[in-house]
Amino acid sequence: MTDYIKNLEWRYATKQYDSTKKISPEDLEMLKKALQLSASSYGLQPYKILIIENQEMRNKLFEASWNQSQVTDASHLIVFAIPNHITLQHIEEYMDNISKTREIPLESLAPFKEVIENTILPLPSEIQQTWAAKQTYIALGNLLSAAAHLQIDTTPMEGFNTKEYDKILQLDKQGLATTVIAAIGYRSENDTNQALKKVRKNQENLFINI
Ligand SMILES: Cc1cc2nc3c(=O)[nH]c(=O)nc-3n(C[C@H](O)[C@H](O)[C@H](O)COP(=O)(O)O)c2cc1C
Image 1: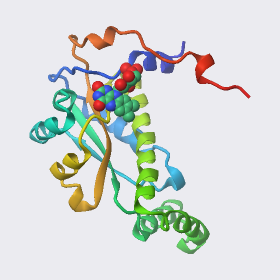
Image 2: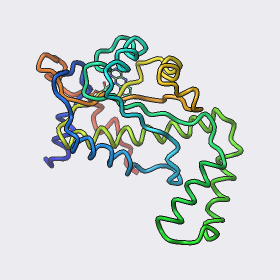
Image 3: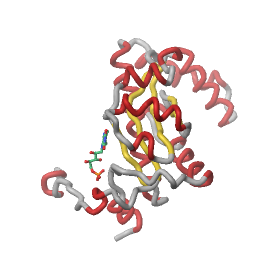
């Protein structure tokens, strides 16, 4: 078995963290890089990613997270947030970035810009949000795999109150909304879930070969 698969077998949705263990700045930088390198539709990256270490803030979020201890006891809490509306400004900032990064004139990007404008801007806000939320889950998946590679534990979490999060983190004031969160850190030796066998569909049930 490759190390990659072994690490995916090793990881599990951690229930109990060892609150004394912190992710090193070097490892955190690697995880940030993996998040930054995530693929997204058109490359627009329609999200912000909050990296929360502050204990006071995490204590405030605890109740809004169905009292799940991962929020307070992990090393860090990652919060994925999307804009309530995707605007022309988001697209223009992206075009500027491509133009600068690749050293090509902005005008040459006009056809690409038009495609994004015509497909995304006319969508009703809820559809834009669903589309943007999907992109955050790609980044979440990348985070889980990258962390497993570094033998860092993670818990992807949807068990929280989005509206409460947006209020506590003042995301609502910035026109942002939480989609999904992840605790990252190191498992407690008392977490009995680590001994559980992984349950997955067998390949006959999962794959359709054509
Ligand atoms: C989007 C998403 C949301 C989840 N929400 C929670 C959660 O709120 N709390 C929790 O303990 N586990 C949560 N899980 C973990 C899943 O229950 C777990 O990944 C699944 O049972 C498979 O087990 P494994 O990850 O340990 O292999 C979530 C997983 C995903 C992907």
